[in-house]
Image (cartoon, rainbow, N blue to C red; front, side):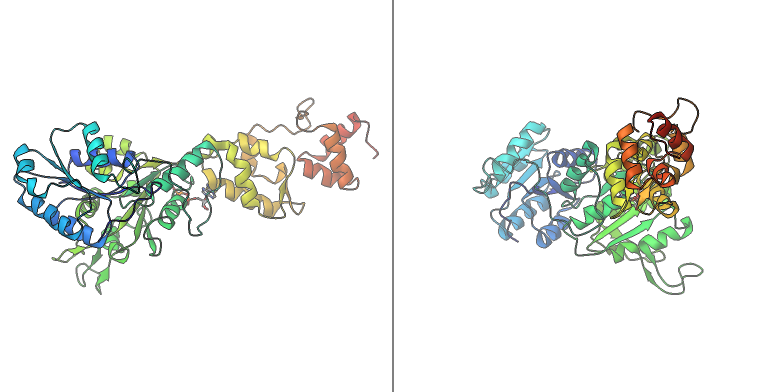
Length: 452
Ligand SMILES: Nc1ncnc2c1ncn2[C@@H]1O[C@H](COP(=O)(O)OP(=O)(O)OP(=O)(O)O)[C@@H](O)[C@H]1O
């Protein structure tokens, strides 16, 4: 395969060939932080397969000593594509010397230990092209055209950061971890990543680890052979096989038992799975997206989640903000959930903005849905229509206890205007204003506008 013309807005696609370990994770993490899209393989054989199947902008190859296969790989890559930049990192300077024969301006060697600055300048040097002077420098990725999934509503800084992160991680092949409280939109974000990924034309298959009994989870994920356990009346493909070539979204990853964590790590390392009851292994190529409402780092500390799996899966991780951390988005979200022809009565938005939303966007969506059903005035949701716990918790004080009415937000002209709009109908006016009828009478008395 030939390498593509580099678009300075596109993340650079890097194939990192390195045995699994902390060094590989660190290099991969560093490249990803720079905005590169990194695919990682452990062996030269896998690297061969990957480069035959996909286009890369550069191969970073960590050579072990002695490294005849690695040198063979360089020669092979060279013969497939003479202009593909290759950076080889080796432990022994003699290997670099021995490789002079294949040394070109598109191939360079670094000898360990290496500083990240050296890595940076070596990558720049060999990946310099006419299309992208001075290397494919990181720039803000251009907005991607997305397939139509439900939109992620919000304009807060926190949501803007999430959008930018999605643009960065979507084109990569690495696993992605999405953390966040329940209802913050983790599944929505996973769908968005898939829709903006290179495998968007393939299905995204979802499994919720908390919803499948632990005894069945292995068979769900990896499949089983007929007769491998009681009830296995036929051979079944697992979700990894079904998602081959596409995306698997593993929700509630924090619920995965220890033995399955080990098996998941194995798939992430080399893409190999084994059906329950089978002796043969199968190779799959699956983009893994995972979500959890736990803090996985805490789970690691508590000994409930494997540290190696956590580091493997969390290279591109993020945590979605809770709704209370972005209450400036509540107005937009409410308008979205209300839909056309509906509006909020006076004083409702501040009540919603003051609430802490432990169930996040899902709770808000349900609250609006309920309020629309219960609304006495078609097209208007007033405070009385909101779930009482939300009104109570937000400290709303509309009741007619002397002096407690929120006169700040209900000013004279507005009250009279609403009354006029409803042709003097006080029941409707009170509902729209989000106050009870006695409070409205008292206001009208005060304004000298009461004509009972
Ligand atoms: N920013 C958003 N814009 C629009 N809708 C949203 C947003 N965030 C969440 N939602 C909606 O809220 C509901 C819950 O979202 P989602 O299922 O993605 O949350 P989650 O974090 O995966 O929840 P859980 O941890 O309980 O599985 C969905 O109906 C989703 O469409």
